[in-house]
Structure formats: structure tokens, C-alpha cells
Length: 318
Image (cartoon, rainbow, N blue to C red; front, side):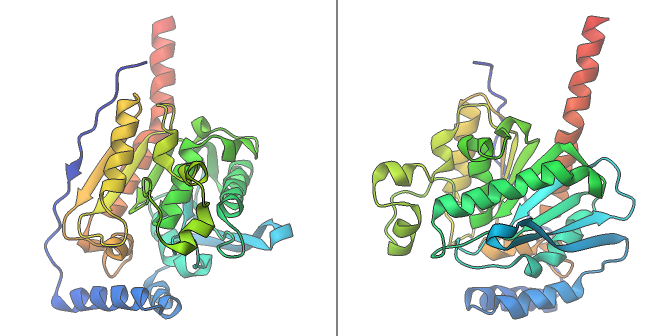
């Protein structure tokens, strides 16, 4: 086994607080999200996004049989850009891709081609259903990246909360991508925002129905269970004030990858909760935590890595 690439957990300091008006907006957004007003609040975030310079192609069917579609956001001059498939959260029970236009545009403004798919949810399907949908979306992105100025060899998966769980399973449990003719090793990286990766035992009846009644079934829902050191590089961002997904989830996955000889960086951001971590990518709340900057830097570093390795190999041959 190769020597592990150890990346100690980093505690990322919060930036200075913005004026009290933004703090109040953040509190209202979080309260609204937890209170079930997602559609209204995300519409508000979408209204703050600026789409100049970003080309959006919406309502692309990637699985007509299940009426699943996706949206693509890209820089107007995209050519050979890294591709990010972003899975939104919602406890595997709710969410719509249209709510996340602001996120797609924010990432596209950083030079990325961003794919935001829908996926089926519980109780319509259980884990096997939404995981197959996630794998299909990644396969679509790989096959069609070039049509949108993206590089299929610089393909990343990213998600928040339940969406991070989907992405982590794609990166660790090879059976899902194998079903669509891909391998986790073809991913250039995984970015998880406040994801559940090691959350047994299950006690909520909904989650037991979602992931299985037996221990073996439930174990198959845990990304940490499949780590073998062959995962793509990982960036795991986590707020320390998250009271929905315990911060130990990120630490457990990061430590498992490191022990197995893989590469994972865990960033713990103090004073940030579950929803606030995601909203830090939005224009009104971007100053709360360096999420967008860290995600972009990670993607750029990993997208450049194959080129650096190829140059080093060529130099050794000469």
C-alpha cells in the first residue's frame, strides 16, 4: 500500500462578520429552510444571482423513462473546463434542481461547467433508486461534457447534505458507476458539504425504510464502509455548529481515506451550521465562510494534477 497522503483537518477561521443586515438575512434563510419554506427562499437567492457571462441550458432530459432532467451552467467562453455534477440535499426526500440556479451560476463564474440534476426521492424510491439516478447523471455529464465546453477527464462530483451522501457513495462504492460503464477512478475528485458518511445506527423509521432493515443493508449505505484507498481525492467541508449532520461524519470519512493511503482534506469551519455552509456560496452570504474559494481551489488543483503527472512521467522517460 502506498504511503498515505495525510492532510490534517484544518480549522478555517470565519471572515469578519458583514453588517447586521446580512446576519439577519442568514438567520431568516436558515429558519425558513428548516421551516419548510425552501421554494420561496431559494427563489429569493436565485433573484440575487447575476447570469451575465454564464450560459444556462435547462430542462435537458437525461432519463426520460423516469422523467428526470438536469440543468447545465457554463461560462460563455468555456473550453476544456472542469465539469462538476452537483447533487442538492433534502434528506433524500425533497428538493428541485431549479432551486439551485444561484449555486450553478456561482460555480460557473469560477470557470466551471456545472451540471445540476434531479433524482428520484423517498418514498417513490429507496436508496437503490436515487443512487442509480445519480450514477446516470454522472454518466450523462461524462458523455456530453464536450458539448458544453467541458473536459470529461476533469469530472467532479459535489453535493450538500443528502446530495453529498450520493456523491460520496459514487466515489467509494464502485457498483453504482459500474452500472453505467464508469469507475470511481475516473472521477477527478469529490467535494462534500456537510455530508452524512458514517451515520449508523438508524433509528428514524423513514431512514430505515429508505436504507434497509437489516444491518448488511444499512451498512451498504455508509460511504465510510467502502473506503479502500482507491477513491478520488476528496475535499470535505463541515461547519462545527451543524446540528443536523454531526461533524464527525466528515472526520470519519477523511480519516478512513487517509488510513487507506488515499487523499482527503477535511476543513472544519467554526460557527457555521448545516444550511449556512451551503448558503456561503450565495452572493448575499459569501463572506460568511470561504466555501466557494476552497471548492474552486481544490478543483483547479486536481484538474491540473493529471497534466503535472504526465509531464513528470515524460521527463523521467527522457
